[in-house]
Length: 276
Image (cartoon, rainbow, N blue to C red; front, side, top):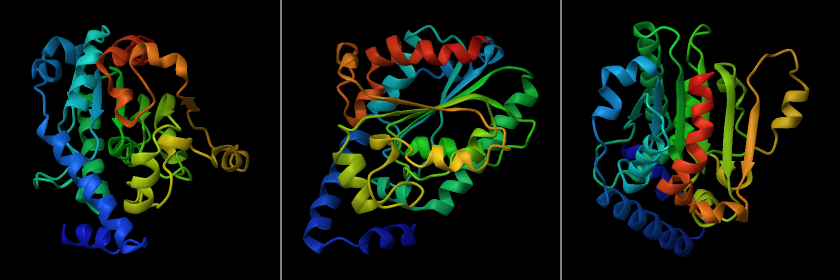
C-alpha cells in the first residue's frame, strides 16, 4: 500500500501539474465513493438466477459507486435474468482509489482470486455462461482475471467499458480463455480521465499515456499477424459515436454506465452471450 502511494508521488510530470492532477483525481474518486447506491443482494445470490448463468461487474478504482450501481441495475432492467454480481476488488482503505490503480501486484492477486471464483462457479453450475463487464480500472481486472484461468475454463465474453488499460496491452492471453469475444468500448471524448489522468497516474497495467478506453487497442492487428497459429477469441472494438447520445451516452468516462444506456444498448449485447 505504501509503495503504491509512493509510486504516485514520484511520477514524471512537473510538480505543479502533478499536484493539480492529483487533487482533481482524488476529489473525483472521493465524491464517487460517497455516492454509493444499494444493489439488491438477490441479483447475485438468488438460486434461480445462479442456475441461469452469471454476469460479473468489475467496478472502477473508486470502488462501490453510483456508476457501477447503475451498471448492475441497468443490466437487470435490460432483461438479464441470471446472477449479476458486483465484484469488489479494491482496497477497503478510505480514499484508496490511487492505490487501486497503482498496486499491480495486489491487483493480480485479486484477479487470481476472481479466476478461482469463476472456476468454482463453473464446477457448481456446469455449462452455465459467465460474462465479465469491467468499467475503467475494472476492465483491467477483467483482463488480469482471464489470464490465469485453466484451459478448460472458458468465459463467454468480456466487455471493457472505458478501460484504464494501456493501448499496447497484449489481450491475447486473456482472449485465449474466451469462447465468444472481447469487446472494447472506447471514446475519444474521455480525454480528462483516460488522457490526462492516465498520463499522470498511469493505467492498471502501469503504462503512462492515453488509455485504450480512449483510443482503443492500437497494436493488436500487427501483433496478431505474427501469431496466427494461436487460437484466440476475436477483439471487437466499438468506438463511441454521436448516435449514442440519444441513449444517454455522451462519450464521457461515466457515460458507459448510464442506466438507460446500459438497459437499451449494453444489456442486449451481453444477453447474446448468455443465451447462445
